[in-house]
Length: 414
Image 1: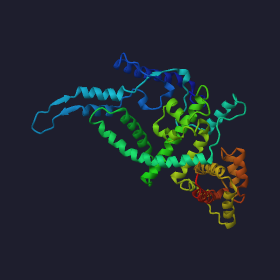
Image 2 (image 1 turned 90 degrees about the vertical axis):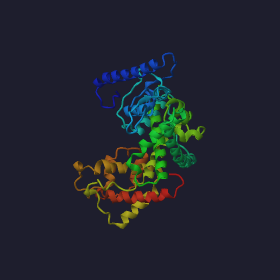
Image 3 (image 1 turned 45 degrees about the vertical axis):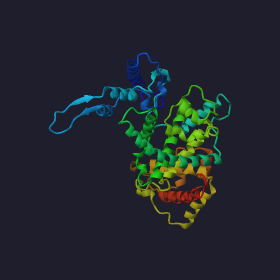
Image 4 (image 1 turned 30 degrees about the horizontal axis):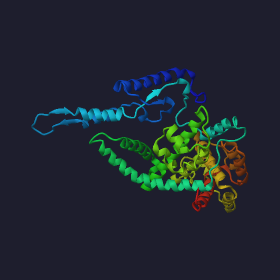
C-alpha cells in the first residue's frame, strides 16, 4: 500500500493474494468460454469499471434466466417449463464474454490509497515538481484563458440538454434487452445509465429541476474525469506531453466513462493535459456554485459562540468593500478555506474556543486555515477587516459570500 495511506505493510500480502485470485478467475473464465480466441489485454492498474472484467451479479443472472424461460401459468392446466437455450447462450455470451479482456497483473505497478482521500492540490504540486526535475523550473500546468473557460461553460450547458434527451433513449435501450441480444451501442448506453443513476441518488439533487439536475450531473462527471486524470498523471511512469489532448488521454489511455470525457470531444485542438489544473479549479467552483448552498454559513451545525450578530454597520460595510478589493478567483479560494475552517473547527462541540468574542477572526483564519499559506491568499487575508471577531464568523461569512455572489451573478464566466 501507499506509505501515506496509514496502512501497515502487513496488509500487503493478503491484498495481492486476493487480486491474483480475482485476475486468475477472470482469465480462466474467458479462456474456457472461448479457448482459441485472441483476447485483448488490459493492465490491472487500468481496470476502472465493472464491465472491464468478468463479473457475475446474482439478480441480473436470474433475470436473464427468467427471460429465456417459457412457462404456462394458466389455471387448471399442468405447468410446463422450457428454456430457450439459443437465446440464453446469446444473452450470456453478450453480457459476460463480449468486450471482456484478459488482465495483466504486475504487483509493482499497483499503489494503494484509501478511496475518497485524494487531495487534488497535492497531486498538482507533485506533478509540477516531477516536471521541473526534467525541464528545470518549468511547470507542467498552465492556466486556461477566460475565453476558453467561456467555451467550456457553453458546452456544459449545451451537453446538459443533450444528456437530458439521451436519458430517454437509454430507457428505450433497456426494452431491447428483453427481445433479443443487445448491441454494443446498447451496452454503451447501459454504462452511461449506470453512471447517471449513481449520481442522481445524491441529496444534492433535491429541489432542483430536471435541467439543473442534468447539468449538475454532467459537471460532476467531467470533474471526476479530470480528477482521475490528475491522479493517473502522477502515477504514469513518464509524464505524457503537456500538449496531448485531454480527450485522447481520457478515452484511449485511461478508458474512462464517456460521461467523464464527452465534453472535450469538440475541444481536442484547444484543451490539453497542461490545462487540467485550471479546468479542475473551474469545474470544482462551478459545481459548488450550482449546488446553491455555498453562500450560507454552516449555522445548523455551528456552535452558538460563533453566531453572534455583528451589529455595527461600519464593519458590515468594510466586509462588503473587502470583496471589491480582492481578485475574484483568489477570493473564491479564500471563501472555500474559510468555509472549511468553520466546518472543521467551529462545528466541533469538543473544541469550543472560550472567549470567542475576544479574538479576531483574522487571527484564527491565519492560524488554523490549512491552505491559507500561499503568498496570494495571505495577501487576501491582510485585507480582511481586523474588527471582525471570531464570535461573528457565521454572520461575517454570509455578508462576504452574498456580496461575492452578486459579483459573479453579473459575470459571463465564473
